[in-house]
Figure 1 (cartoon, helix red, strand yellow):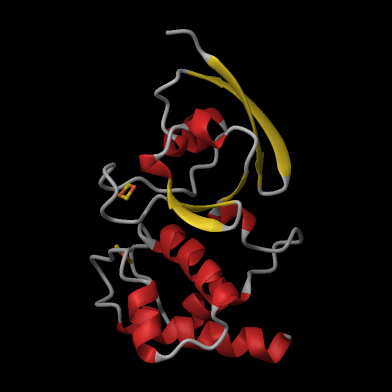
Figure 2 (tube, protein in one colour):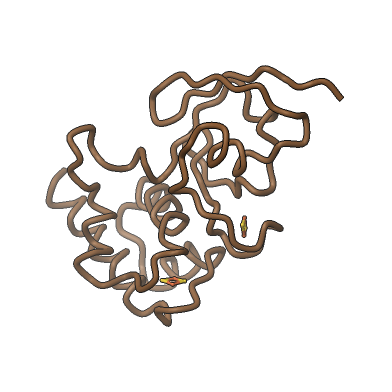
Length: 160
Ligand code: FES
Ligand code: FES
């Protein structure tokens, strides 16, 4: 099979790559574009570690071919902070509330929660639990992650 030339806008920057048709978006981001912030855990759509935003919507990048993302906008964890490095409200809340331990799952959570709070700026407890239910964490027991989501909502409201 011939390689395919694709163009993605990743974190606001136009990026080009030539990839085999079966190249996963997660592998393209990590290996072709050097964006290793997107982590890969299960590689079959269960753990949510590889979650990125595709045109603003959370997707599991291990379940998508890079070629399918051709022409679309991708936001990875590297694109969540401000250009000057200031952490996003969601990133600050995770740090403040100790919403991570080893950090392996964290990029996926940060992308998921960023979209969650954009769509629902003041989620209730059940909405938070439901919203992060597609992301697995083996370390934290989730309590501090839930706390971080509520704290991020507070910070976003304060800064609005
Ligand atoms: S690596 Fe994609 S869902 Fe687990
Ligand atoms: S912090 Fe280790 S898997 Fe979530």
